[in-house]
Amino acid sequence: MALPRTLSVIGAGQMGIGIALVASLRAKIPVVLLYDHDPSQITRGLGFMDKLLAKDVSKGKISENDAKAAKARITAIASSSASASSNDETNWARELGERGTDMVVEAASERLSIKEGIFRALARNLSKDAVLASNTSSISITKLAGAAVDGLVTSVSRASEEGKSCAGRVVGVHFFNPVPVMKLCEVIPGLQTSEATLEQAKAFAIACGKEVSTSKDVPGFVSNALLMPFLNEAIMCLESGTATRDDIDKTLRLGMGHPMGPLQLADFIGLDTCLAIQETLYEGTHDSKYRPSILLGRMVDAGWLGKKSGKGFYDY
Ligand code: 3HC
Image (cartoon, rainbow, N blue to C red; front, side, top):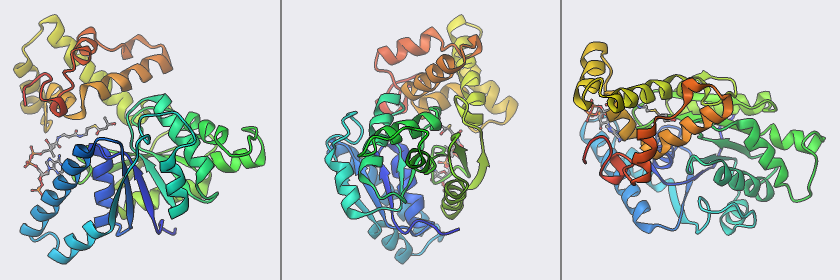
């Protein structure tokens, strides 16, 4: 299966940076990395990439030339609206259309309205062959495909041939944090995803050095339908006073061999992201086992988002 000759990654948070890095370093694909208006974020992200590449060189995992070539394959461009607006007529999408791209991986915030706006803009501006992938942790791929069809220049019905062909190019490629380290990419076909798109998504993930698992398009897919209730239960244990933070994490680390305790892992993922995923699970299933804990909501209200904000269950 042919790999994309060019890739665009939308969003330069921890996931977008990681995906751009593995695509460039391992799959050797030129990447356009789109970041939103905060220039400090991209400076931090590119600096972090340099550190990871330098570490791999010093450990003899890659040569200095490999590191230089990987960095040279990444072009970062600013966008005032890629992750902040649901407006279709966005300059960033026009620019991607003009540059031409075979595949896009959207790695913006885990909010349906943001992702729908991006998929509408992508369908309107990109070539009719481009694969439109999302790194969403929980949002329906079929829903994002519907938004893409709604974004086509000439509005078409979702069931028309053109609508089906557009929806057929939408797929989920769910990477795990830290992307350079975690060995899996979960690939999710929506109801209308074509076999060719699914195979391309798998080939891309494998070229990025990942093993692939496939999940149906259900809320949270396999990974977060299992992980999030576990993290939430740990937060509820803390909330109810069953054990202290340190004892909860120690139990899972030392008793069960997890690399991180669940509260540390929730901080690492981002408490806002955990809450957004849990809300999608709860709203998508109406099953009380997915109800987010009150403490998690309060912490997000307080701006305690985990590692990225300097405070979560731990201080950083
Ligand atoms: N980015 C890139 N590389 C990183 C990194 C980061 N943020 N943090 C650590 N690493 C690398 C280190 O450089 C080191 O690489 P090396 O072996 O080549 O030297 C390697 O990872 C091990 O790092 P450390 O020795 O410093 O630390 P640990 O042994 O404690 O490992 C960890 C760190 C890999 C993060 C480990 O604690 C771990 O596996 N934690 C669990 C992570 C996890 O579960 N991730 C999935 C989250 S769920 C998700 O992403 C899905 C979403 O939808 C919510």
